[in-house]
Length: 160
Length: 416
Image (tube, rainbow over all chains, first blue to last red; front, side, top):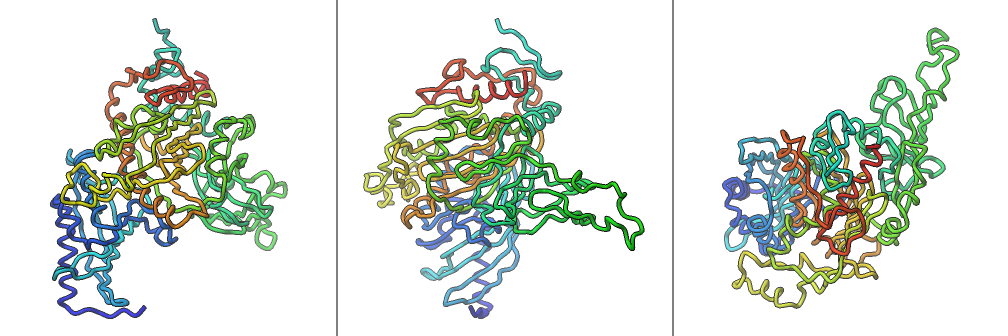
């Protein structure tokens, strides 16, 4: 697959989408999170080991925006967990056109901050994205979160 | 009324029966060490692999029996062996890969080499260099094999034990437990995903949680919140193995939301409130087995779990790390001959389980809640009286009988 570089403007817009995404989660505006995706989208979280082995099942799988919305509704209304929030740090995005789709690869680090003030590294990994333009806005057609570790500490409820 | 029985310097057991559990059993370091010898290195079978993980000669994986590191390998005869992952020379970890294929295991420290059965086959410079130095003339390689454990397989599941006194695996499981495992593994399966989660709690707190059919709809509110509860037609708990094994099962209507008003509400998103699923395809399911059982959690003493939650099939194995920490390993699987539609439903239902599971995530933290709560109350006890004080089959899942069963088996094995 031949990769072609993108214009500075496209690069900037992709990185702005990444920033909007992490701010949305880190600012705890979870209800807005699904709006960063296309209606028909893929969001999944899978370990690097399983991703390499092409295992079909990961930690989490959503293939439309309604499923994303249900995740957030469940987090808000059903699931029991101690209050906590995330802080994302991203690498720059490697962006290219491949087979007519805008493809981005971005490294991330997520710290988890618990309500009692304790905080620790929670996850590191890579976002493998496909990005499309819908009504003038860049949104995720696909976001595969590949976690470097195969182990989750305690539980994962806030999306990575 | 209750007779006080002391079985351990730091623990006082308040009752003869298993209706009271002194919290010290979850915090005591000496007890934890004793468990490693008596339970995990003693007369019990521990799950170490699915046969399909190591299908070929030379295939191996590394795992744990309790907190003992082991290698599980298929030898040149096709037989599966389990050995302690410790070089017989100076004690180094022999194999530090998760899995792979090899002809032999060679220690990186001094190149002592073992075959797939764990026999020492060569020692670097055994005869010295140019006949100078080397091992003494009376050094016998056969006296320095790896520590070997017994291995038996059932229904494609590989179990191991370090004790010669452990009864044969099928006898250990018993007819009902073996029957349930054979029911799930009645045709070839395929691994669909693996992961683990770190539990900040004693291993026994997770095993209590697995056997606790009372908490299911109380702690895990996903189904009730989204009004997905259906009348439980039938259900119960079976207990075997002196209390150590259990199956909690139920049969639910599996009409799911397909074609119902619920699904239509999901389609009309304008009507959607916070307490309906926008995409009910998550809970689409089919009746997987002829017996009509839709939910079954089985545990085999000490730390093996087989899960059927609708069409989400998984093995869970708990590995104790220390007195207050454990790692829970998940293997999600389906059948090789799943139709694309069935595989898609399993994939959607995989959202229900694991550390990010909409139904199960709370199990990742509840043991830690207890571990924190009991810190300075180790002389106090947990109360286990739901469904009575006995250990026997239950017609209702609103019961702690299987939890009591675990403690009955634990006390018998620990000799207390």
